[in-house]
Amino acid sequence: MGEKIWLKSYPANMPSEIVLPPFASLSGLLDDTFRRFAAQPAFDNLGHGISFGEVDRLSRDFAAFLLGLPGIVRGDRVAIMLPNLLQYPVVLFGIVRAGLTVVNINPLYTARELEQQLKDSGARAIVILENFARTLQQVLPHTAIEQVISTQVGDLLPAPKRWLVNALVKRVKRMVPKWRIACATPLRAALARGARAPFKPFAVGHDDIAFLQYTGGTTGVAKGAMLTHRNLLANLEQTSLWISGSFSEGREVVVAPLPMYHIFCLTLTLAFMKWGSQTVLITNPRDLPAFVKELKRWKFSVLTGVNTLFNGLMNTPGFATLDFSALKVVAGGGASVQKTVAERWQRITGTCLTEAYGLTETSPGVCCTLLGTPWNGTIGLPVASTDVSIRDDAFNELPPWTGEGDIARHTGEICVRGPQVMRGYWNNAEETAQAIVDGWLKTGDIGHMNDQGYVTITDRKKDMILVSGFNVYPNEVESVVMNHPGVAECAVIGVPDERSGEAVKLVVVKKDPSLREDELVAYCKTQLTGYKRPHFIDFRDSLPKTPIGKILRRELRDEKR
Image 1 (cartoon, rainbow, N blue to C red):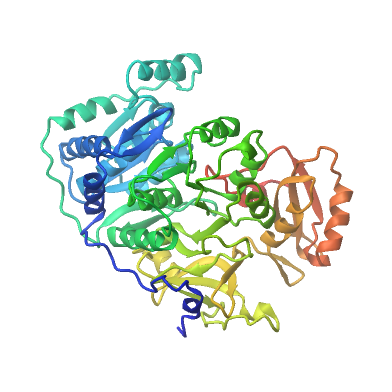
Image 2 (cartoon, rainbow, N blue to C red):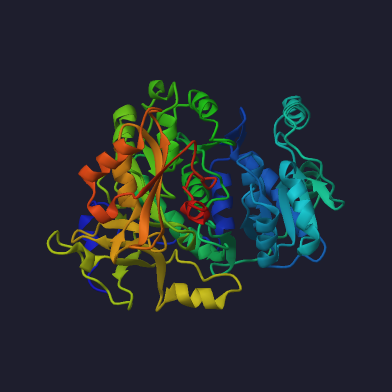
């Protein structure tokens, strides 16, 4: 590893290294936060808020309930299968404070996906929204789950609103399929039992696993990344240093539309709690009109999201007239932020999109653009105490690109080293050995670094298309197509071709209903060299996405052309 060239691009007041906070675990950080901001509002959802003091009490009660379960031992895993509701931080912090390990699960998982994750993690208990309990019921006998804690959407709302919301969800909207799990304990009953129980948590330290966080599953079977308390404490400190310039304690409002079970939203939520910020949890961000209506209630200072969400918000009536006067940070992650989206966002809101790059395996933060920096096509600089190296297929380090010569000679796999890098994959030594080489995490992302230390992602290694021996990066083609005024969304994949090995296929969601294939073909001819141009164009009403809005190219590739 040569010179850390990115440090010369750091602002004058930005430390190059972090100092871990003086806590033995995340539990210490939570205790300190609850003590300092007890009276401050902590979380808001469905029109009701709870304070840090209430989160302290409720999470303590849930922790005590878990510790009273028969046979529970240090290191046991507890799964959470919830959308963004007030219940999420309560049970999340309860598991952490008990000294147990959190297993976050996507509530929209199929029975097959849920069974795979529960069996792989060996989770002994699960907290689940009853809307998804029938899926759990199908797989429960094949797992190690001994205790199910069920909850309804409105369970932490005050009466009578609680009763009305639960009745609406169950009886009017019929969103709860019939289910029956004999061992299920209602969350409210679990909290009441815990309130009467002693609280004697397991002692855990920096090297213990805080989260068994499964990778997103966009490239096959998900693997459990072992994220330790040190990993999370380090990345929280790295994140805080980068984004906290103008924050005031107890005054910031953070809007969190991304699901808390995703590592990006999870870590940012924990990071903003450091200032006693109030977090507004959005349960269903796909309902964009309702989301915009909720935004009208707040003078929000922070918004997290992904490219597709930002794009969707700007196309929703009423968004452009919101009050953005308090907005300080808009953090985009999970997928590349496109130029057209970033520039339009800045025009409407007056705030630059801050693009963050990370992975589940890095807790997640690795690189970030500097606050207030307009879109420049990069993912910014490595955060403090983080090394980034570009490596070729033989794992040789490639030099930074100076702006001259063939950029392909400087393009390779992005590799990361730092205190936020996972311990490894759960029960998977072979995958761990392939992913971590000589202390470096191989990200699977292809990119290059310039001589100022700025990193640019070209694409995912597995998404790269090989056309007659030439590399085609879907991100590049997608960015070009998104500049066409008639395009709302698009995705690019490679499909088999007898002549060239692979050919480029473009899947488009129209903004202009009159858009024709020949128009896009002619447009691409003016923007892309021959081998990069789409040979096939398919118009769709929508694109397959993960719950946080990542476009699932894998699903498109799996379809028959």
